[in-house]
Amino acid sequence: MVLQQKLDAVLIGHNYLNTMLAMTLIKKGKKILLIDDVRFNAGEILTHSLSMLDLMTLKSWAEFNQVRSLLRIEDYLQPHQYFIFIKKREVFLGNQVSANLQELERKYPVFFKATDVQSKLKLSLQAEEFCLEWSKLFVHFKPHFFKPDLSLAKLLKQSKFSLLLEHFLYFYQSFKNKVHLDDETRALLNSLTYTTRAIFHGHLSQTGQLNELVHLYLTMILPSYKVNHDALMQDFLQELKQAGGEFKEMSVGEFQLQGSIVKGMELKSFDGLIESNQYIFMGSLPKELDFDWEQSRGQYTSLNVQIQLAQTPHFLRQKKVISSSPMRISTDRPLFEMTFFEKSIEIKWVIFRQSGTKLSFVKESVLNDIKRELLFLFPEFSFEIKAYSMNFSKDLFLVDSGFHSFGRSATKQMGKQLNLILSPLRKQRAKNVFFIGPSHRLLKNNLGLTSTLIEIKKWQEQK
Image (cartoon, rainbow, N blue to C red; front, side, top):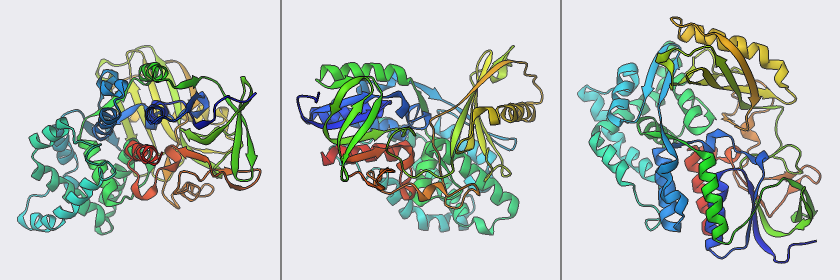
């Protein structure tokens, strides 16, 4: 049995971004089927956190496309606060721009402070370039589509643009000339860049283009938020159905190929084929499907660890702690994120997972590492572990070329076009299959979720 009407596109994923694109295509009169397949979970990099820049983009999208769920997106957000440890040097990034600037200047004065007249003269020569890159962050959004959010303008005005500019340019000057820094200072700068890019861009990198660093800097000093993803998805799907969209919650099966074209797709719970002009995957690609992007012998992902405690020290409750060090860069466990609750800790440990690695292989060593880290960071507290559980997440991290000695560099497999999905059976591109997700963010313009939103907008405009 084949669906009676020819579909323009089938969107496959398990995240609100997929639903967002479906909504806009339906409003354009396209015949869309949205399939919620939990195996295409994009992980938390793309779906559970928002920077102020991402929030601006989503609100502009909602305004232009009149998507009700996004128009009130603040209802699904909670403020995010970070405690970042490089070795034992703690930096607190909260919801106040001026406080974040002062914190960076106080903890990293060698990177975020320019006071002498000579330095200011040098920095002023780069100001025009900075402003150009700042505007480039939003060049993909036409004036009628993207309207700068007043809350951002207010935040930046309160913090004095000249001060923001001075701090950034001094940081960028240090970054560009880090080869001339002493070994200890250079290692500290690399660790700071590496850790914050991992958090905000999903990219394990000690490098960065100017626009990436502008975006990183703004993300560090501006407020960020945690998304109630399940609640947002629920409201989104209700709005989708009201708009006439078709939605199925099931698993994708096999694909029928004719040359380099996918002619049909089976659903495991649907007796027959679904035919569509195009197929859009958003999130991650399950290994059991016929499509792959030539994965190497391993990749960086995160290991989720849930620990039950007898009691969490009151001082740590509700704190989000990110930790790394110069010695961990280029290792198979470079950094981790801990969120403390009343009687538990949720940990996301970035880990290099070789193909075939089972959870049982790393369980004991990871638990021992956690105990050592808790003792190292908080020697004044004791942590009585009652129980724990672990699972590998769907998060994928980009890495710089030559970054890791394990296997082939991940950046070599990640194409610069959305349609670089191959059929391992035929070793050719499927011309009507597209992929949007963390593994396809452009290396020369990797702005985390912002880049993905730009790619979604490009797709929307082309249809």
